[in-house]
Amino acid sequence: MSILPEDKEEKTMQVSVASENAEAIGGVLIAFFAALMAISQMVNGELEEEMMIAHNKVVHYSSWYQSKSIKESLKEGELNYLETLLSAGIVTQENQEIVKTRIRETSDKIAKYGAEKTELMLGSANIPKENWTQDLDGKMGVIVGVREWEVLADEYDVATKKFDIGMLFFQISIVLGAVCIIIYDNPKLQRMFIKLMVVFGTIGLIMSIYGYILAP
Image (cartoon, rainbow, N blue to C red):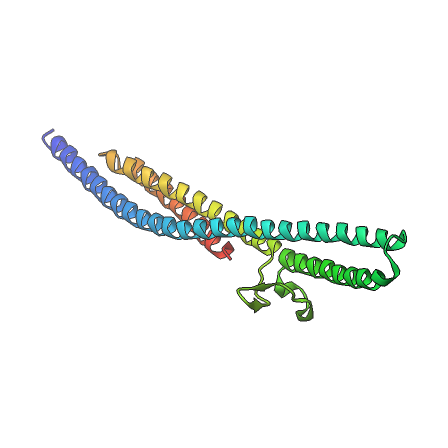
């Protein structure tokens, strides 16, 4: 009968050692996934900044496009007015050539505004070089169109959402690791939490990598 207490003590020691090992593994995994989460947060922060820049560019270029539309509409109104004057015979014979010249100039400006609008909407890279009409700081062919900025903004948005999901799984993994450390003298349950921690942390890593791949 004297052996039983010794066996019990030995078993208790084994459980204690196993529990300590599980705690050590849990602590290492917490540090590992916390580091990965910090990296993901840093990359995600940069992507969010780029996304905000893209959204601001969409607003800026859309306003620029609208200003061209307003100018085009004004010139179209002017053209209609001049053509009406000419067709109604209101313009005297000696002034008709002046009005016709003004009509040609106005038509050219309307065509120019139309071409500039197309370039602002589609971007210089998506139209033939001979159709470049809008400069940016004195340089031609460098316009990034509204639609291009919209696509970039959407791509950054999708990428940041993947990072957000990844960080959520990292956080769950870290919480599971903390629970693993809190639990004591139950190696079986601790091992289960470690496995769950690895699974959630791995999913977080995969989602973060996926978000990085999706980023422009």
